[in-house]
Length: 151
Image 1 (cartoon, helix red, strand yellow):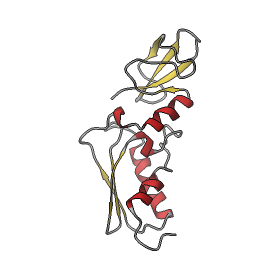
Image 2 (cartoon, helix red, strand yellow):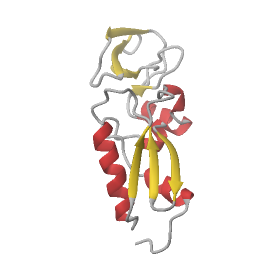
Image 3 (tube, one colour):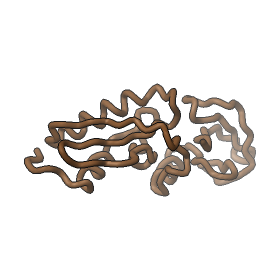
Image 4 (spheres, rainbow, N blue to C red):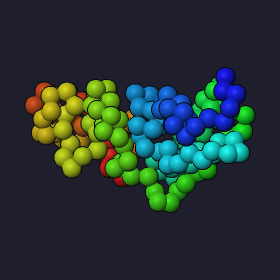
C-alpha cells in the first residue's frame, strides 16, 4: 500500500503491468495508449484508444483505475484523448517483439510471418480476431497469422 504520493515512475511501472484485454501479451504501456501521467491531487492518466470505437476502451479504463487503487492511490481520474489519434508507431520496440513472440506480425512497411520471417504473405481477410488486426497466411511455411494493422 502506498502511503505517500506515488511518483510518475512508480505509476508508469504499475501501468506497465496492465494487460491490453484484446492483446494480453502486451501491456497498455507497450501498446502506446498511455499518453501521460499527472500526479496531484491524486493521479490522472491520459489514454488514447487505438481507435475511437474500440470496444476495449472502457475495460482498459476500469483496469487502470483498479490497478492504481490496488497500489493505494485513492483518487484516480482518466482522461480519454482522441487527438492526436493513436498510431501504431506508438507501439514500443518491446511491444513489437512481444507481438512477434505471440504469433502476431507487428505493424511494419511489409508484412512478415512472425514464425519464419518470410515476407511472402497473403492477406486472407481484412479483419482478424479484432478490427485492428487482419488475417494472413504465409506463402512459405503455410502458417496462418494475424497482422496488427498500421493505423
